[in-house]
Length: 358
Image (cartoon, rainbow, N blue to C red; front, top):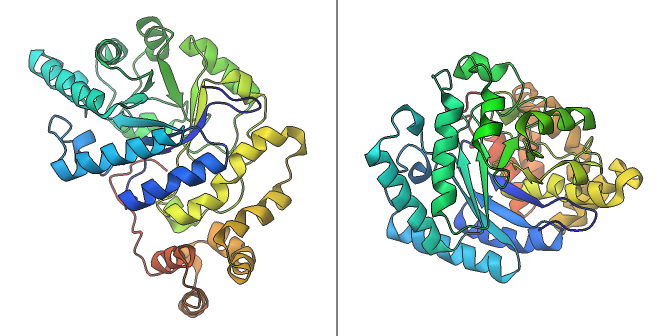
């Protein structure tokens, strides 16, 4: 799965709020293939059949769209994954829950996915024997799935104190118990020093590897903007502080994009290049190249001119006159990139309070 000069690299649609359309997901396959990515994971937080209603089957029309989507990605040589969030199942993992889980995995097997993610993030974790229960569920998934790879996301997926503040005190020995309970072929997601990490220092990644008993699979929460604070921004700047040495220190790298799918392509363009170019990676040059994806030179220049307003100033600090002027400027373009900025300025990407971390 690993490519030269790059980790096993992809994106995970794993955010709260306004999800992408199936048409958008379909179109993303070509973008990912052309830019050095290897996989896509379908895990939107607003798909109830993956989270709160996980025991129920998708409606037939959604199942059909997913099958079509999977076939399209695999025909292009890309891996396709699904993220299942069996909401707080570990509180009562009885015979009935096991049966429901096995039925769900059978459904995934019918779809023919390459990656299956068992996600325990954004759930309360201050319960006895949490790691042992989550390991048991994940092992049952491993034994049932036909996917090539199983990746587990812990409830505590970073050392960031915000996780204990929101989801309760982390049980003592949680990471060590996960390491003992999960066989080495199961990967474990990790978001870095913070939930939304600005950097992934080698020393931190090595520490986590020792703690988990395996190389972590990075869940990179950039450029995702579904939080109370980050929803105020359109994050267009290139990835940085992801050293090339991460190729050897990680099991893979999944970037969590913005609710704005088209605009996400601008920063996502840069991540494979940061690995390939290593010490020659030039942020300014990459920024100039990334915006050219919009296809129209005037719009690309407009985005470059406004990048500090969108990326740094934020929606709450754009006064009404400035907002009106921006809407008028971007209304001149018949582009999905411009339309996403207009929708954001008009408040159509409202913060989803279900997102408890930022």
